[in-house]
Length: 193
Image (tube, rainbow, N blue to C red; front, side):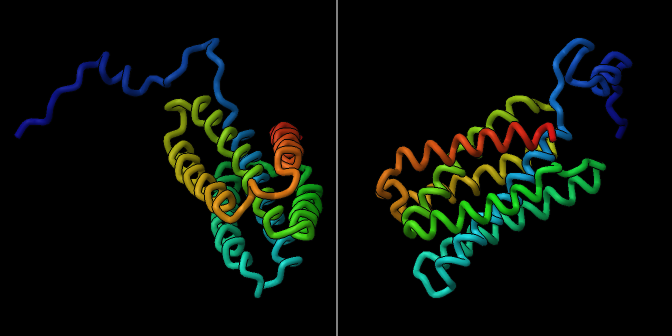
């Protein structure tokens, strides 16, 4: 059976990038850098919460499950950074301390406040991942697939936190607003520094 013939114009079109000179192109290195920083920060938040609540607390198994998924996300972005030669954010030591402190403080307030932290962070991460997917378009299908998969898990974390009473936390609107604003600042800083 003969192979279908591809015209030269179809061949050129298939190898042509999805952008033209002058088009704004996504900064994929920056995307991966900030995503790795975010996953690292999430692992530190959960570590802080677990340090305060302890393994026996009823909420600990929920947090441990989410922490395990965040660790898997982090390992994936660590590997992408290595494979693509992308440097991590220089702010990683700050995110280490800030993430752990945020987790510990929210857990000290109450287990529901710890869940409120998760709900706030994941709300902002969902928005961030959606913006990245729009910016990527068809530019990097593998990265888009990863972001889509991880975004679904982050949304599941948010729903788990809400089901565990996140929105019943005293002062939830203010706590959520402050944490979300902090996430936005961390995202912008980690992209560049």
